[in-house]
Length: 561
Image (tube, rainbow, N blue to C red; front, side, top):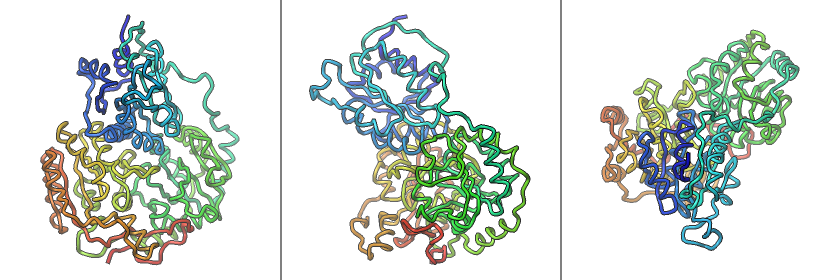
């Protein structure tokens, strides 16, 4: 059959099972939006800004397990996607961003709203394309989806010149979405000998620790991980991105590792003799001083990306491949262990240094504990970046993967609200909460208008402490209390902002006020904002000073007085 480029694009998206698109129209992409108008089976959510569309596609991908899709026009429309694409790249999220550019006759002439978005996004995509000929469009779209999903996931950008959206060519529909499967694998799976060597090293350990990262979440390896840990009987810690791969309520769970990790997790890794690393790339915020990280331990790393091996930390054995499949093959080789004395020692540290706030006023930790209680530990939590993010990581027990959605690698303020729209679109039956600081909320608060316009009932919880909290904390601890440009004491009324953008608004200043406000927000089935007024001086503890060994935690109570 003969179709124009816009028709081919929509048909290819339908081939890939796309049912939701986030985007913003403009001149160069008008042909595509005109065709999309005819396909009511695809839900398009008009965001308030293209950055919100990219974050929403990211959240949708993480929540659904499918490829997220966003649309933007040329020039500023395309460049507004850049932060969202970079966020997805750093966290290995499969997103296909479709932009349209000026016609081929106008390329390279500084035409109105012309931009080289392919060049701009080259460092922050797994791959990107510019399609100038309609004959190349179908195979490019199909290839883009394959690349986004295969191996280590990530974003792919497809830029289409306007002429290619209008020109006509032959189109052959396909139901086989694996057309571009590699004849040769990206890597050989671990050999039997490598697995046995790793198992021998693990079985001989006296003080093992299992360290879980985001790769275990992406691989949906929670079942296999639980089986292996059950046999090994070792304490478990995780990264921010690894939350939920191992049940946060399990007695073997010690908490998060790294700069704001628990003392139990940090000291266990510092004292272990074997570290089994499941899908972590050893971020600097996790390892602290790399020369001192797990210095007494043999390290076995499981990761899908061989490029992550020996990049930040030298390891003794690496098993490269899909984590779920690697764990399936490794678990039968692990002997039933005990390590009772080691587990008891780690548990003693956990009991001695609990994460607990003893005061009776409204705090970020209290808010997170209430959200957990009120939702039966079943909410989907999105976050912004900073203190709010760390409180969400420390004080909510994630029992399964795809329960926490946050910008880990790039640390993108303004990520959470857009992402929550995508998460709710993918998980309409779940309570979806975006935990924000007041500084982060100011970044992309306009997406509340998207929530009200599209009737997406997310709950925005603002930890309003009148400062840029994490930067303010660093200024207090490391910059002599010189609070340069981190004070937000002004006249902005977040409740009125929410109401003006078509959402419900609640203000909470006392502990007893939070539960009624949250329950009312859930019952309303409307998008809502809860402005939680906190004190300025609340900090996130424990904290490892930047560049210090993770065993060098501040000698402070893990409490807010």
